[in-house]
Image (cartoon, rainbow over the protein chains, first blue to last red):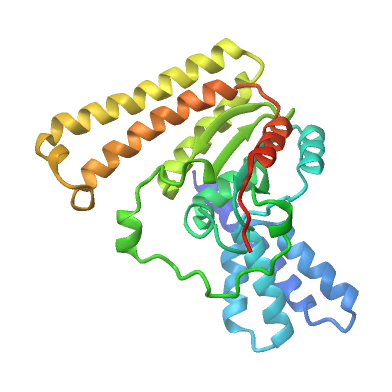
Length: 111
Length: 182
């Protein structure tokens, strides 16, 4: 049990290091590198959310703030596909189920 | 649904992890390219308003089709639901995926789930006999009882579309849409 807890703690520290490193890269001189870092942050997924939010609260850099805001939004909202056929192809290839929500209105409008 | 159920952390987690989510706008073509609602144009519901809003309301204006990877419908939830109830139905749908090819097993699962809701409604009535004569806005129990009835109906609707291809259903929805929104 202690081994398990130790492993979990080690994982947490490693994950925090990873987030810290990627957030630092959000200030890189190269725009390509900044985009890549943002994408990698998003790929870390929900487990990294708390750490990302801490950086969002503390950063004063406008661009870093905007990028972190976008990452948090991506991790905390449903990514809606709009093309049913493309989504069905994607579902078939990934062997993943589909949720099709049919309503009047757009995802960012009234619903 | 957008600002309540689909904004709930647990719902987002479950949907993102287990489904490819598709948003289908039932509006006629001419209404689809209108500008998005400005930020804050749709005010957030207060806790009291949410409490009073009838679960299951909205009917065919909010249809959640859960399908397998081949696009065959496994479950349908009609109307607006709070995160807790929607999560329950989405979890039920997720579990149907493993029996997606077995029509009989799917129908049995739906019947069991529907019966569970009916039992819940009966227990509610038995435990709160005086509530069923109360006006809707004043009785949370009555509203819950009505919602459970609507859930039972939604299972019947789901059984009617089991295994139907979702792209056919979406085409039918578009053909039957007569709404013009300026």
